Image 1: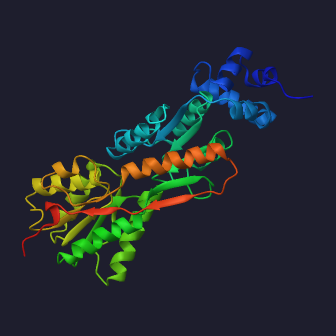
Image 2: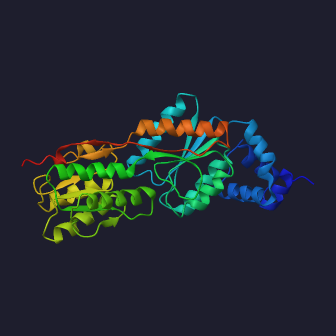
Image 3: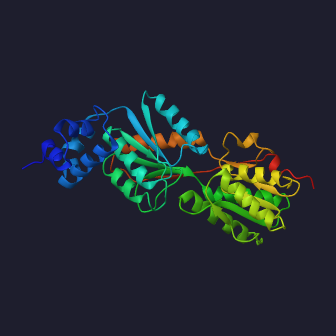
Amino acid sequence: MATTIRDVAERAGVSVATASRVLTGSRPVSPELAERVIQATRELGYRHNAVARALRRGHTNAMGMVVPEIGNPFFPTIVEAVERRLQETGRDLFLCDAQQDPDLERRRVLALIGRQVDGLVIVPVSATASGASLAEAKGHTPLVQVDRYVEGVDTDWVGVDDTAGITMAVEHVVSCGARRLACVSATPDSSAGRRRLLGFQEAVMRLGLPTDGPPLLGSFTAEWGRVAAGRIVAEKHLPDAVVCGNDEIAVGVLGEFRRRGVRVPLDVLVTGFDDIRFAALADPPLTTVRQPHERIAEECIRLLDARIADPDAPIQRIALEPTLVVRESTQRLW
């Protein structure tokens, strides 16, 4: 006997009306109820027939997007670029903030699925802990990972070539005369943190340069940049340059150096990554690696639309080339 929506409602412990709202997206429901209904459809195999047919027939003209932390200035830039692309075709964007919590990320993903969005754009919180929620989401709706990615979950991805970007920063400060380099970045919990750290290590090794001690790894925040800069100063022997994993870290480093009387770029060079809006307004203006935000958004929507049109098409992974933006934080007068 075929599974019915009544069976799904009974398994989830909700009314038929609530189950219908989750599966049709006609009205929003709480993330908790959406999770129970989606879990019931998976257990009963319902999503493989009635739900799948409904998704193929209907479109909400809305996409969902989940980012790790909306307070990070880089992510709103990507969100705005994605939304502009969707507006060009008359579609809406539902945005959720995972607050750096993989469990909350999963609940946000399920809530968006409950709204029957036509596709999902996800910047994963973690390269490992986000895997389960992405794998689950992939079974319900077209999905593309952006900027960061989870290995082992076969979805489309578009982002920047992190290794190439950090290599640009290293080669730039070396061209300015730096020989002893320090790395301040985030722990390799995300693919961006991992690739940027590996890129730094590979670049200095290839150039035969000494590093100023082991990399200082924390989080992609200005507060961590301040803490790391304090540790560098406490060593009483400044490196020639500090290569930072993102602009937020670099801004924190600049602020702490200034507070402690370390002159940038006269005493030490500093670089960032991302080219957020505040990078040009830092004191001094920050040399950084610019991500092509508009191209990332354009490719993201192209990949998502292609996946909606053909769910069985080959997976695509697109790493876009970044560019180096040179500003005063590395313009030392020799």
